[in-house]
Image 1 (cartoon, rainbow, N blue to C red):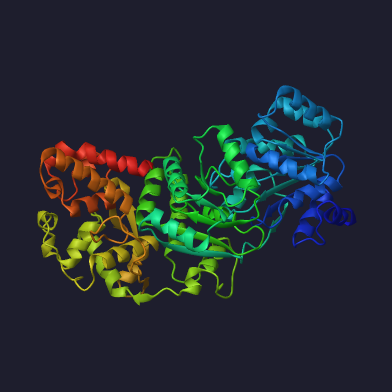
Image 2 (cartoon, rainbow, N blue to C red):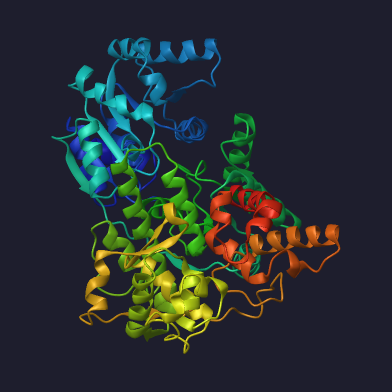
Length: 599
């Protein structure tokens, strides 16, 4: 370790290791394998860079991101480290020179993409070269349960088979117990020492709120709290990244879109600008961010809810790597959940994989809805206990106003049960509030014991109750039955009176949040979709010379926003859609919804 400490001081300019860096480095320097879980910004790179310099030979680093290899190698060269990379961006002559340097023992570190590493020609070259260690960066990519699965990583167990005497170190910032288990299995790391550093990033402030008007909310956050700061804004779709980036550009921000649909050259250019320029905002899908080493990212914003807590933790961890205060800011709605569940249902994964993803999505939604310290819940997900509230999340700084929702929850659950677990939120609220709608009378629900028992709460309050019951696992959304709510086993004690429940009281929207419409809307209605549907209705009304309500009432448009129908049969079940209107307008409005979901 004397040599390792000398390298730390003289090459990297640090005076001491951060625990458990010293233990990890000692393990690898002495020839042992290691599995390292360390938060973003915790100093993972040193855990393989220093052993590579301390041991004889070249350290081979398997990285999934070609675009970042150049920056990592450039940074090492500035420190005097003999580093290079092998990937598809090199011309043949340059690639041959790198290979010759490797064979001659003239490299300290070589970064290589997994698809190139697993080629037989590359493996034979490595067998003829002096290798000090193999570092498998972003090791969660090997796990089919992980959030960044890469098929090429599945072949990396060959390192243990063909280079059994060379130490391996696998590193990741996020992996729950199941993902850790698969990393160990897939990479043959059963004998490896495991190092799980603390996941807490106390300098990051976690804040999560309901989505009302995403662009306006984001603009207010940036103008009031981060004018002139570098940051990342995550969106679910490619179209939305471009739309939001253009909107921010119009508002005077230096914003760039980033997604897998852009050419490699454009992505590389935008990434370079983000890393090297100041005050750049990257509006991106999850295609951006893994391995980003920009220290002064002051905020990470999510305009859509991530699929898993692991993804959320890793993405927010890109903020504040310099240890200075940073924000993890997110807005979400129940429609995010419906959209994510639709994506899961349409995926090609096995039923077991879909069930696991569903559980992870539920955990993410639970983190959003929690009324206690978010950091405690986040760390607990990764098996780490924080004994006291953090004092640096929205729940701690502005304690959530809660109310005893036990009786309301029982009413809601009873309404779901007595209507046959076949209906969505809008109809259930009608039943509870005693509405005299066509649908209530069509199904004879005015005679149910739950009809009209919930008049003390308004529509928004009831929607909040249902949203929170879904978030906490008492109810689930049946996508096969048009967004119907179903009872889960967990609800039995609550229905029997054996359990109490405190619910979050959703705060009223601030007047500063400019609305695009004067029509009062339920809190979880997506304003952008609402306005798109109204525009469509207005155009049709003008073409036919009739008032807009003749096409569809506002209530029908609201139900479209909530249900998000994907087919004519689903559209036909919406209140106010008869056979004639289904035939005349169905496809037109379905296209508006499809375009919005793709945005």
